Image 1 (cartoon, rainbow, N blue to C red):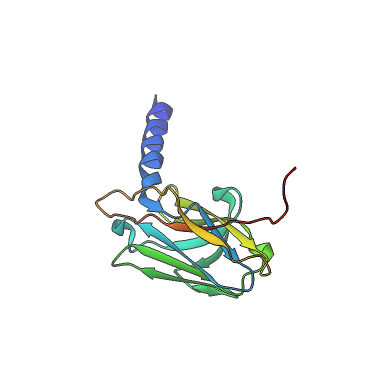
Image 2 (cartoon, rainbow, N blue to C red; image 1 turned 90 degrees about the horizontal axis):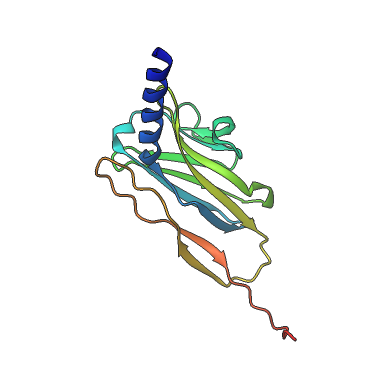
Length: 163
């Protein structure tokens, strides 16, 4: 009986936490440039540690920068606007190998909460034809409103005729 009660409580805590942080699901940027990504979180987490990590599976991602200790690491910097509930991550001098899955995360008791971001870095010599497409991001609960985030999607044009 105790196992069932614990499982139900854990499930409720985990499912409630999912809507507490939001981020753009896809960000596309150009190599050798910089990119800034904003994650919006419920202000009730303003005093919690936040971090930016990389890895396909969120629970096993490797922290790149944290709000406690060092908030810069090589080419990545992070700032935390605790008043507005905005975590800002900037990566400078982007490289193709920076492409991959990243996570905005908040350290909380029992289980950290995450919002996933796929960063796509394109070659610098690609055409500059691009557009911004709104992505779906969950709205943090508690009255805080996260604006929809944009992502750059290249629109390639071909001069070759299809036969």
